[in-house]
Length: 224
Image (cartoon, rainbow, N blue to C red; front, side, top):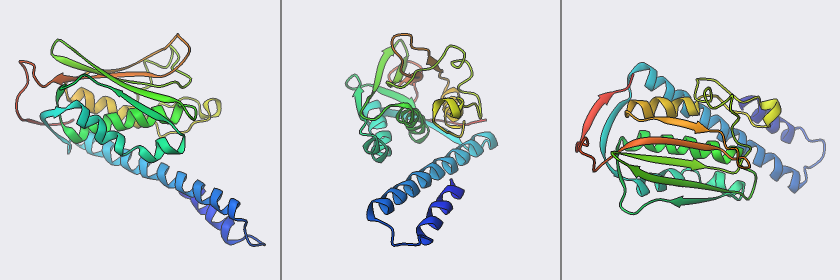
């Protein structure tokens, strides 16, 4: 991203003629996009570094799921606006989970960010949740190209990426790996499903329901 930003800026400074406003706006938009990619890369590297070093401590507290989701979506408003993507939250009323608020929010941010990246312009992303026994299953559903059978078992591996030359999308291969680390540190599960009904990504993960018998008002432990 840094090299691309520099290339675009250099092209603006070395125009032989005064650049047209339309061209300038297009270049500035490209700079903004590359800067955003760089911010995501830095954040993912920081997250992964903290997880692997054991510095990340999870503090489990009772969190309303709708607040957790709303907090994540606020971070993604600009990305949604850029592609005219609408996000629908289909969540049961008064559903609480036991989690580390910041880390669980990062999982939702990463999954929705991934869904935005793969979704065509003007599409819709749906976030659903349902309580089953002592856990809550949270799903992020999009209308992108979907996930093939040979990818569902590998997509959460560190640095694993779908072929960018084939897909037209680039990534770091870290976002989903970070999701897996965080969810498993919570004692949960995370998985992707191959959708055979017309495409679309299907990602699901579990957190402990806050009103289950296993829940505690506050629990702390280190991630490793």
